Image 1: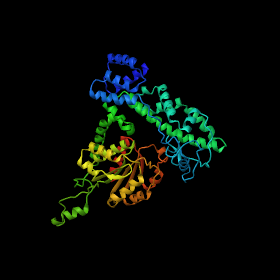
Image 2: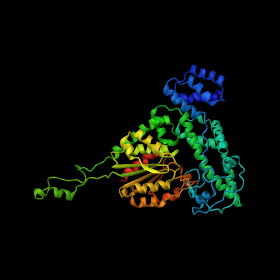
Image 3: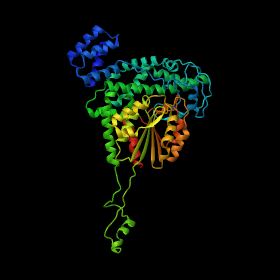
Length: 489
């Protein structure tokens, strides 16, 4: 346990809390008295010994909660519902049974959107397999995945992370290395061997099990990556603000601590300013370039045809008319926060940005940004619209009532959300109407592509009516998406 306290003090120093050698010794003596059994008492004791200023105490609280807590492996996609698995594999709605493994609707599916993720970014078509029972997994990790034992998976992930010494991660490019080490520590090699053996089997239950294990393995890999990202933010040695900002641009916004929001806001404003300088062109008369013959002749008619005043061709850049529809429920709220901030920082190059927020019922929040400072407007938006069960179908119906008549061929509609609809009616026909009336419909999904059609996610119903569907979960993705939007006007 002394080693645990040493690692925690290192994490505090990494968070810019000054802890001297004497204070470290005081912390060890204090922990000898109170022990680790009472988490609240331990937190209060160390809070008295280590941080000194009010700001440091706030940082200490966040760091303690992050260090001495386990984020349980998500049940979002590990437990597959038979019908969702069949949709993902066959693409035609045929159900593939899950063999009565105890998984219930609402725990998430295991589909892969019509293909399996091989781990190297390439997709392969899955051979359809008739529905039926699954055989029993033999590997330890395979049994955990099929039981959807999230608590045990979380413990195994943390134990493997400690063995891999994930706290020694120094640079962001090491994320893949530590992800692989942790998966190996959890038993990935045995799982892969089982998948290969079952895939070659002549028995259909074995092949069904192989297919299911592949899907769950891909989702577990994504969650281990998230765990490594959080450990990187906690332990990495940020040598200078430049490196810190660079890593914050790349990590998932859902993994960013609240104390880093101010830094990210500054990054967003700088990124927006850069885009403004690149795209803030206006109609103007140029002094060189290609001659505009008709305009030149008209301008010189008063001179009896003599050419005194030359006119050159100029470029008109239309500013896009943007409708932003943001899901602000749960973990998606962070993505919506920074997309709204990004869009409203581009007023110079966008003629009009109208923003709408929803979790169930949708409402326009543009007026809030006119009345309040940006940060307060975003906070109010999240407060008013983040409650309720997510319903994309209802949100599309509300959008149609509010402003479908205002959508035209100059309009770009940006939808940010994970498409998890709680098994409600999708109302995809409304999105088709938006697709037909607008210039572009862009859907930004913060989840990994291999989860887009698992559980209650219904991207397969919405994607055909979007001009562009992108995975978007970091500032780099946001900058690229908004930059491409401005380039295509």
